[in-house]
Length: 451
Ligand code: G6P
Ligand code: MN
Image (cartoon, rainbow, N blue to C red; front, side, top):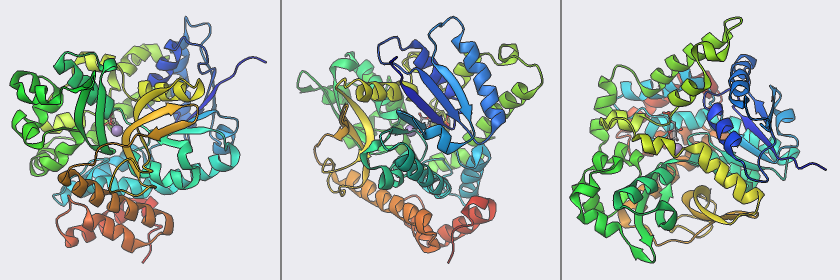
């Protein structure tokens, strides 16, 4: 029988699916994906993306086949891997997540702070339904969760899929790459001691041949300010911490400034993306439009680079072009998929259940840490304990995530209020109350929360 490797992408009408397909096309090794099924609720979006993929596939006689469906059960049945990359409420929902919080003077961002809580409340019920269906219809499939807020969404899905769901983010690997370049070392030869939660982690050591080079970097002013996180946090703060934080920690360490900048900005990140993507899907809907007229695959791939909002808010500018070239999510996802499918043992920083990797979190908590990956899946590697300041943040944010999951799975409004009120970036219970009311008013998907 001919070898078949089936990948299903949930959120298959999404703007960044061409990036994933590009990575699949360029994967020349044995055991690569032979068929992709795209699932989306909106057939118009699926149609637009399929036309781009067809264009990308030109000149690749062995391109993976593509099929589409709006039926979730059909999409997951028979899948070897499922990428979950959904956006409940669409980008319009993201704009509300951002705006309601900013109007209260607190951070409005899709993953961090109250915006992330609102997004989690909306997303988790849907993610849990997906997890249940996969557990029933494709119990042997591996699920790779891209959906933000990735930490809490992966944890909620793990209640039904156990270790078969693995969350991914490209920010730790990007950080490692940038630090390696600043040090002048080959990232493939370095061991990155990174630990925390998704968008809430710290790079604590960079070991090459057993020697930690991070102290050398911290001592070198020029090297330290030559890369993105160095510019964002400043040499002094990095030395004070003794580690390099994930860029998203800027929302904590410069909360006042990032909130002020976002309030003053002409548009939020969500509003920018909404406008950009509306243009794309509208163009593609026009009868007879070929992708290459206005939105060829090259332009789409260029315009869909990730995560500019941290940098925009901090005025850190565009990411270095060499960083973009080395790829984001799609590369991490592909590396993970290959390691599992082909039993190619490797180490990746992933979101998995903690077991005993990170004190003081319990075994079920999903954390973001280096993992050994092979055909048996991903096993977190036990690392050094976090320093006190990091324990403080990680445990309080994990408690918030758990209240979000509780609210999303039981409908308990009290748990949702606790989540908003106890988040370190919300400074008043009265504000939390108004956030909850504001989100419930603007977001129909939150009607399930009851007193
Ligand atoms: C980064 C983050 C992701 C985020 C992505 C896209 O890579 O790690 O979690 O989804 O950027 O962000 P954007 O603002 O472009 O939607
Ligand atoms: Mn991420």
